[in-house]
Length: 308
Ligand SMILES: Nc1ncnc2c1ncn2[C@@H]1O[C@H](COP(=O)(O)OP(=O)(O)OP(=O)(O)O)[C@@H](O)[C@H]1O
Image (tube, rainbow, N blue to C red; front, side, top):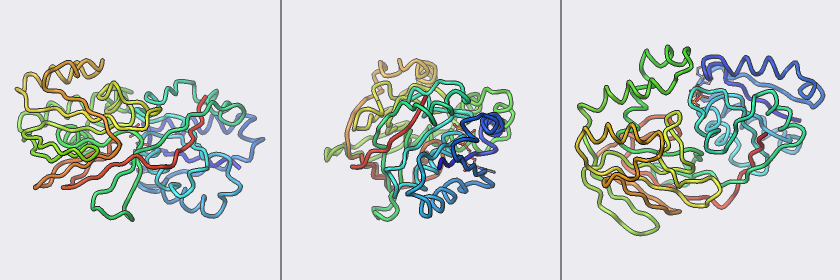
């Protein structure tokens, strides 16, 4: 049995169009595919949790049609079943995971290949927790960012212009606009950063990003050296710099050239902790919130992803 999870609002309705196309395909009808449509935020995670608990022995693949937010939910909904392969048909507005994993194929062809002859990628997602409580441990597959990027993600998600840009298929523009709104009043961060046991005091940083692959924010190449094939994180620290230089960073990041700026430092590690005396903005796979502590580790278990 193949489980297909569809987020109706992802990519401004693109996921639903893709579902309609693949439902008419012979592979869908001939291969015991059961589709589930999300009705609200967090629903994908609930559906997958229930379905995998009941049918885990019968499920061949969980196929997601949606954006990175849906993938994040599904990854966490089935974290107790790492042996069940995941497949991702990108239909969001940002689709950074698809970029990082090299998924480019057209959706119907991708679906057929997932069912018949999938190529596989075996990778370790990131694991994170906010309260040093292992029960609250969750997974992420793109990045966790602290500071400016999280503030921008929050602003973009809660803006009226996001829907307009998504409808025009230029979803990244909502981040561009949010960036220019947030920058003038943005306050930098004082953070204690620990990478594999080595402690660094980071004063006046604009942001710290911990990545599993290079992309975020709808195509910005924030961590050019990160790769899903490597079992460590790429950590980018943007130190204090004049605001005009932040603009330069914002332009060059689309090509991954921002790392040549003196204030941009790159590190790598398997166990990362970010701590602050005050509450700081954080984004996990694009979902914005706040925290004072975050621990990120590379888990033991790998997750199999099918793609075309
Ligand atoms: N029916 C629904 N109504 C409202 N929100 C939903 C519904 N179904 C899913 N969601 C939420 O929609 C959010 C956005 O979904 P998703 O990230 O998949 O799409 P996207 O934002 O278009 O893509 P990307 O993250 O790649 O930019 C997720 O947080 C998800 O929980």
